[in-house]
Length: 439
Image 1: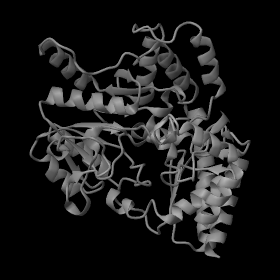
Image 2: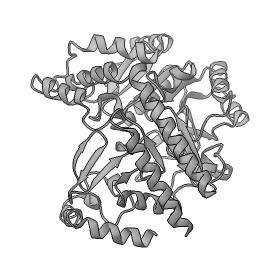
Image 3: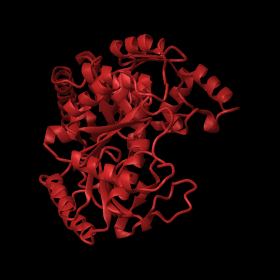
């Protein structure tokens, strides 16, 4: 199937092929950002137009988009409210390195939606995670952090450490890192309470940086009581708990932490918070903010090393305001979650119909199927059952029939522009795909 579908892709996309050859003359790996070739296609698929969930490529082929920029366009491509804000605010200045009039209101909206009172804006979630790690190390006086095996926190060097088979080491694919990151980063398996307790017991960990649901190695759900135990153990050992909600914002209008009643010391999120333009935010509790103030009052002269010139820009703040008021509300989220339930059930029905050893998982408006019978309990287990030829075959089959899902794993998002017909098309396409795979 993979061989056939790649041939089909070449046949239906001659203009993309020509554009790829031309772009390769000047771009590394032939694209502006090298992840754009991680779809496994023979050459990049060049996009001409994107609105809502509708994509049109350079060859005029049309697609229903369930990837949505791997969450960056979680509320659809160029939703009207975002496009209107861009047009209106773009004419009155984009960045000044001064706060805009919207800043006070947006700070209040962030607290109202996510529960934490103090915030900062960055360009990306990777930047936000880096800043949070620096703050946590500064105010605790501890150099170590803890992450979960096969976590994903963007391009943050400190998190590129794994512990497969009990051997802690740097991720092999990490480019150009001269330091031994294992000296500063502890790694345990998600859902392993005993290992977590042992790692935190020495009292040398500044913070735990964690997704409340692992989302980039397939979808790994927290075991009942695990996140509550994580909170207890971090408080007991004086360790700050930071939740990276960049992907789990799709859980509800307050993200996963608010939906589950968690009490983190800090939150990080990016991607969809400004409708698809570069923007992210991190927030802290009152207690953490007070410690930061005390630290800043006592430190010496010199640059903090935290922050970049375009962070907190006028256009970022305006777009965050629009996105929070338009999309992060119960009324806006409920249709998305209901439609995600429809997709979850449809995929489950197809799996049962064909008797394939797969399963499907949903968190809010985010749905994922994995080509294995049982839900992985941690990142190591998940790493053994994704990125296989079966996943590549499914991705190529769906793409050639006008359905886009996330290329790195089998993730699908529901946005306000997604309809029941879109969902049903995906389900029918997956049904047909499995039929052909079995034959």
